[in-house]
Length: 438
Image 1 (cartoon, one colour):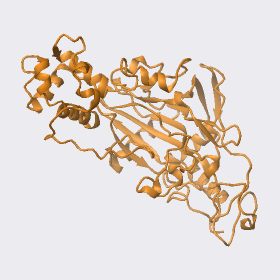
Image 2 (cartoon, one colour; image 1 turned 30 degrees about the horizontal axis):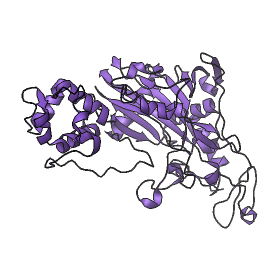
Image 3 (tube, rainbow, N blue to C red; image 1 turned 180 degrees about the vertical axis):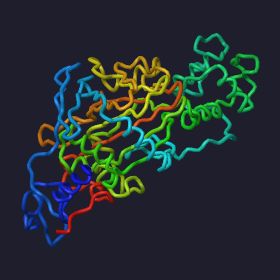
Image 4 (cartoon, one colour; image 1 turned 60 degrees about the vertical axis):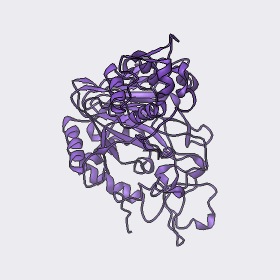
């Protein structure tokens, strides 16, 4: 009932066909019959002029700081600052056990599909593996010196593993190396080593293509291995609506931001399930490209090209796997971090690979049922109060599950940049938001 009551209030505030996003340059002739920041026009959508943005940002104070937030009838929640770069909070007991079970059940009923690591700006990989390929690999991958690391004239299994790690960011086992050569029906490694003469005759193009395909599709080696479902948090479900109200109370963001955000994503990780280090949002550059939450049918064609604009991530741990499944922030509060440095160390110790280097991360959040972790993927633009630069420190991922199953859910709170702040979110115009007729 609380969720429905709140929804009615929001619907009233959003009333009649009026977009709540604003633009100070909007033609004033379109602004008519305005009352309490709500306008109705005969020409279609209307706008409320605001010179400054409407985003808010909490103060973390310092690592370890605890602050209470009043969330209404549900009492108070404690926010514990776990990092300042990115600004990140732990919120114990954000969800009840019943709420965790409810979300998992809804995801199962809604069916789960294979997760794909893809943003709005991600180019579609149309390459297909061809087992009939023959020849020498291009560039450094076809050079003998990049396979025989000690230059002793013999390429060993360990050196092939080193090649795969450096060239394709794969961490292979001895058995996997031997299986690759068996699958490809290549005999150069039959005696355990590859000589210089054998290498010159070896089909390195096929081997390298096979390694690339492993990185794309093999459950243990691919960037992301999980299943997911999306829940609309529509008002008919009081539990999901209560959670959304709680999110608003904690973030202190206005209705139009909360209700214009993406659907709730629920993710299931089995054994070896992981998601290597990544950013939830996309570049603040290319201002001409709109945010995906503002583009109907985002990503379906060239006209709908977009970028992810996720101001805040709230991740909920829905259960506790027996082993593994931590959420890792490799560069949290790293005094010397920069993106170039991250790339330079990758060939030696791939901090993106959270199956191998989970516990090298600067910050780890161990799954605890009902706990939420919340962080900002962007700063606020100090000039206008809308979405600002992306925070590279927010790079994070899911460590491999070693035993059992892990369930999480993500609320991504979207926000616009100033340039397109007048464009409404496609979600606020979606089926779970109904405008008042009076």
